[in-house]
Length: 274
Length: 276
Ligand SMILES: Nc1ncnc2c1ncn2[C@@H]1O[C@H](COP(=O)(O)OP(=O)(O)OP(=O)(O)O)[C@@H](O)[C@H]1O
Ligand SMILES: [Mg+2]
Image: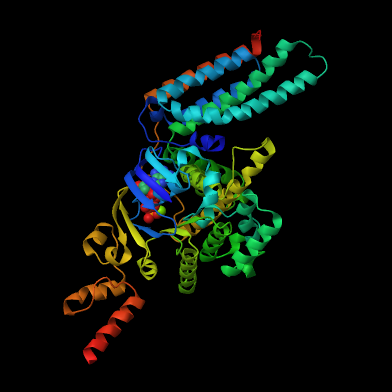
């Protein structure tokens, strides 16, 4: 469980990126943090694994104050995939890159190998195993960084802009993976601008603006609330727009993705026929 | 972290102070004179005097905080210089007395700090734009002069390109500092511990940080070159500039004082023995 209580954060240059941000994320939850550029999303999630410590207020991970433990011990529990893959890739091969953190955390060589094989297979990176990560495309590089964190199986996974530069098929896989993690009881925190991606996952959505949490609730209600979305510079997903426009001719509220839309339309057609 | 401190100690911040207003060429002459003298003397007293001489500039320029961070970063290197000198002198036959074994190593460390301090002062108070102007103002006529004499060099030297390369590298320091911070964070999130273990382990810990920095710098310079070329860089052979550098009265005075002090120091070096 992650708990941020009244967190203020000021960068050394004086920018106040968080102002009284309060949020609680329970075990096994899927949370998407959304909001305009510069809202403080990245700054907030960097508090969850102790990279940043609040200027004022407190952050607890499983009841432990992040000010009292090392980043390394928090990182074992809270895996954080950075926004920009080029800030972490440094090894000669993709394989080594994925093994780096595993060795830091003291897994034995047999276990390292087992996990590397598994995670590369899962993210379809096996063909690039011995390639230099620098020669891969942006999307592939991003996938390597995600794989390198998933590899040690942290309890909480924070993904900062995971869909950046991913093609449709890879997004689909990522979505599947997030759902699988959840089924196993993992906690996933997404930071993203990708409403279409979010609408298919139907997570709890936390909207941020100006360093504060301005709305918090299920995707179905947040992504169909025009007023709130406008304030957070977000446009509803396309399906939601259609349903919102047609509420007064009898379409149901709170429909945000293809699956739900299909169900709603079928029900409507059936009731019209009978 | 020492290596970020060093970068921070070179980062220009816009401000208005007597030092900021000086002509970049005068400031450069000042830093160069101090460094030359620091290399010319090896006596402790002289080096203390030289080190002290640049402190008023830091105070006047209001850059003491950044300067202090730079000094903190540089002190590690200064310590190594001290140590190697000390060990060398100590185990060198013929230098048995302990007092001179300490004095010279301290002087050598101080020499290093003086040079770093003087140039840190220069970079902290000179905007990249001024630097570019000054460089272009002298490099362009110089290459012209050179090509007249050695026609073979025609086309081989591009003064504008050289200036741009230099200015770009200064200008990107802030970006690199930011990037370095983010890279350190990214590796720590993967369990890298920089401040634990023996010296060798710590040095090895910097590999995952330095490699992404170098790769990103290379990638950025490639992208910059492409972006510049697609915006017609180099289409005009002779360029003019909006602002022209002009030496003012204050600049002349500081320049004269620097020259005078330099001359005196040279005289002292040649004809007056310093006790320590
Ligand atoms: N290292 C830093 N130093 C100083 N200011 C920073 C730093 N990182 C971010 N900021 C500032 O803090 C504020 C919040 O930034 P943050 O990166 O948390 O936003 P974000 O919501 O993640 O934005 P984006 O959607 O663009 O990723 C911004 O005003 C930004 O300029
Ligand atoms: Mg961000």
